[in-house]
Image 1 (cartoon, rainbow, N blue to C red):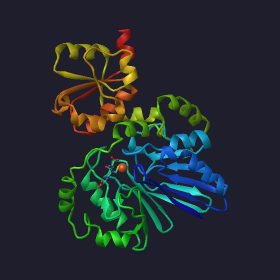
Image 2: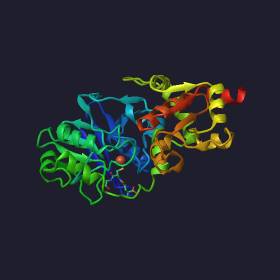
Image 3: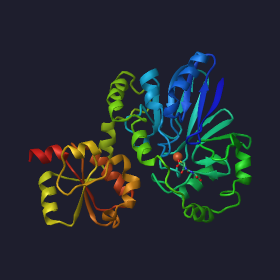
Image 4: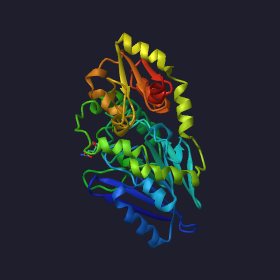
Length: 360
Ligand SMILES: N[C@@H](CCC(=O)N[C@@H](CS)C(=O)NCC(=O)O)C(=O)O
Ligand SMILES: [Fe+2]
């Protein structure tokens, strides 16, 4: 086996390389886009073939290299199905196993820092992303974060691993590299001897500033770290390297969302807007909005929905009626579902989107 821990000094992020030395198959966990050339050089140095690029979650503080690794090396990108990253090849589920030759890397769902956060267990090592950090844990104040869920998965899933399991975190802001389950269970100040209520109280009072890159990183990471121009290529590559497991297409995600939301047609939408008392939201990208939108629509791209809604005075009252639209009605169905999960209880999606609106 081959194992390397790499560090990004700009964002304090750890990236991990795991490989099977016989088959030469390799994967990265949480690669950072600015290091793409170093990663490729490292793989060449060991004669490795990159099979997967795994994410512990959709990151808010750095941009992943996964899309670039797919484009340049044909690796499959993988992120939890709960992260809303429809272009990732593998939509990770709890219990999944990634295989590299004889090595098994097992997924443990560890939600709480974000809804889709996972850890990876490999031999005697666990890669905890931002669920469990050394002497700390990931914050829970954005991207569907939930202190109660984080407490449960750390105490019930991570702390029940073997004492000697090594803990490799997604970040460390004080230069520490590795810990162990026994060390964290017995000394982590947020968790050792703390009840769920005490933990929630701590997490709800961290008052941390927003990560510097959050507005750029979250939308980009939903597309495997690719910008709008690079995404076109990503679609082409994705078709030639079909997902080999747990395949969920963007169409599946739209269909799933539609089971939970209410759609209205353009005529009803117009009527509701004329009557007033409904907030109209365009959830497309800024460039699409700039090219033409419905009068008085607020721009709120889907990629930034979770953390922008809290800052918009128009959306402070979650019981107010909201109508969302996109280009053809697919993305707005997913956005409507996300808003429901954020607590908005009167959200409608416009079937057929802006295209149907223009035709009408
Ligand atoms: N100063 C950093 C903050 C990064 C940050 O908020 N990190 C998240 C993980 S994405 C976290 O959970 N930090 C835990 C903590 O700071 O206690 C930045 O701007 O990027
Ligand atoms: Fe994070």
